[in-house]
Amino acid sequence: MTEVYFSFDTEDFTSDTASDAVRDQAEILKEYGVRASFNVVGYLAREFVRHRRTDVLDALRYHTISFHSLRHSVHPTINEYTDIEDYAAARAELERQESEGIGMVKAACGVDSFPAALPPGNSMSYVAMYTYADWGIPLYPGSLFNTPDGAGVYYCNGFHTDYDRCMEWFFARETFDVKAFLDDAASRRRVFLYNHPNRVLYRIFWDAVNYKGENLHPMYEWEEPERCTPQETARYYRRMRELLDALKTDGRFRICTFDELRDRALADIYGRTVTRAQLPAIRASLEERFRWVTEPVSLSVADAFYAARHFLLHPESDEYHPDKVHGFLAEPEGVTEPTALSAEEIRALAAQCSPDRFLPPYFEIGGRRVGPADLLFAMLGAAQGAEAVTVTPRRQQCEYEDVYPALRDLRFEGTWMHAEDFADRWLSDRLRLQAWTIRPEAAEDR
Image 1: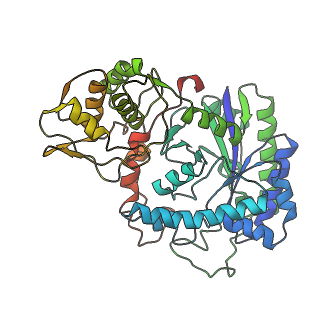
Image 2 (image 1 turned 30 degrees about the vertical axis):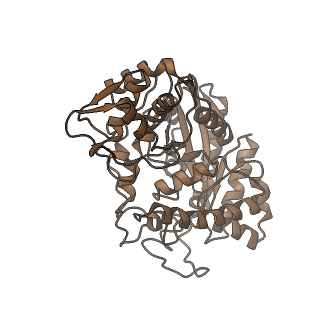
Image 3 (image 1 turned 45 degrees about the vertical axis):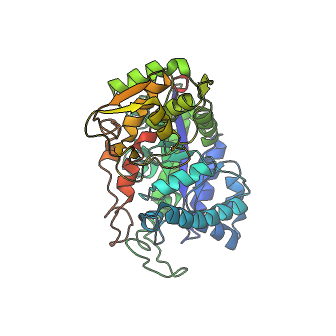
């Protein structure tokens, strides 16, 4: 059965009129017993309070509230100010801004937590991904990952899915074949039906006329986009009801909430168990294809790295429970010729690593440079009793490119609302350097 999620990027803080569409859509969904996620920007939450929009806030109480950044497209955007080499400085600034936005949304909407944090537009930063996950927000919808069945993927310690069905696009067409739409959607594991409420009332995005490439207008002196006709808005609501009617009566679908998905994701992140007896199967999987492991347990390459480390450093232990992991900040480098390592040397290198830090691009011991993939296979051997392991030149980055081409080809420069001088010097490359954290859902959840 296909899971269906409704998600509304609730972001237009430049127009109080646009908030009418937030209220109206929330009320229509409630009529059908559908709890959507309304993903609220901090600045908009502030405007709800400033304009005394208790009607909007009351309508939202039925639904799930998620977070959609402090200020969305205002420059510098999240991508722009985190595109620096110094991760600690980037994270400190992101924490400063995003904690302010989280406070605004919680206070206005009366919630104490969020199941999801969604990237604003095409502004996806590895700094934000790790920070939200550390703040206990495990879902990151609207991400890079587009699997054929819409299942999603774990990455940077969160559960990531793409947005795959934009309601304003197909509701704006002259005709809407709801049966054909549902037949296509039924082939997927999950479908995310998303919408920007301001597009119900306006023909173009609010930020296209206020923040495209730069801050085009001072705060509170915003330009209003061209409005839709009343007939166009009425058609949108009519088609929204038509889709809801069809989904509620079609036995191929189950309408789910972000809260349900959050609970499953947290159980999958923290509920896995790796046993010492599974190490041979894990090693065989990695030798066959150097990427995430699906059997006997779902593991990222980084998970496998720290499982091997645990069993090597704790010979009395028969179980390991994966936790948060990190990728790299620089391209990993491996051995250039066969290199013998004793079990004692392997243990010394393993002791240098911690899952709560980024992996180093290489390790040095006895004048030799050893790569992280080299150390992974050395630890797997030593954890199974080998007194010495010889590692040979191999690929250090895991193989992800064929499954996730969006990550392989990613380049933010010149996209979305980004400023013309945004060079994307670090972000795209460092998102690829987190590929060691990729893994699919655990088998029992698929």
